[in-house]
Length: 363
Image (cartoon, rainbow, N blue to C red; front, top):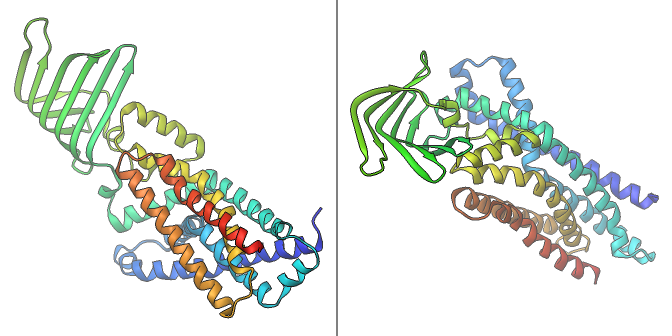
């Protein structure tokens, strides 16, 4: 049963969080408009598409930074409680600090569940609209695809294995370089095809291989076939070869799990970037609890510097959190470092910080 105190703090928690969102999202929109208005006018983008884009931008932006908005809003109104000596009065009445935290935890639970559902179902559609608009009108479609060092397993039926590799692929011209195709039975190589350049023919759904070479593995000797140009059909299309770079962001939780399993089988070298997106769907709501506890511990004491000092401390902590999140996310995407560990490191580090600050606040 919620007491009057619980309802009072919970109401302030949720209202201040919404106010913080309503304050910063318009600022984000204004900054984005100022950066892109010239290109929008130059490209003569319809106003309806721009309005839809900023609707998607609002959801995308709010989801991306909601832990920080939540953190600053908690510091803001908790500092006001401390400056008005309300917290001293509450604790002097016999209520423990842990009991004082209860409405904050309830508020963090409500916000986290909402963020989790948004991340699973609403944010993917907004992310697709947001990124599609940017790449279609502002950046160019050629930047939407993975185009370098592409390695795929394109077939896995019984003992048959087919692997392809391309060092670079231009999706606009449908042309790749340093192409290799390997056909295997189990671990045994049957034959290998290589070419300096490969081009996709849309009408016939075939590929033209330039400087074609095929090496067939024999019992005693290999057979080599060389041609300047050869037209062939393979079991893959350019869309399979070069997935959209932000594909994982645009999928619901079920779709992204299926997509990741498929890309693992294909040997996608960029699988870690997809795993980072998946794990962040779960880690982001958890950060709401951790940052809420840190915010209360930092701002529950009345300081000589008042709310300004608490906000300054909060902003510093928020920027450090963002720094950790971005750095470890990038490390996981660009190296063999575990994406699961990389995504959860900021929460683990700040979780220990939350415990330490909470113990000091109780004193």
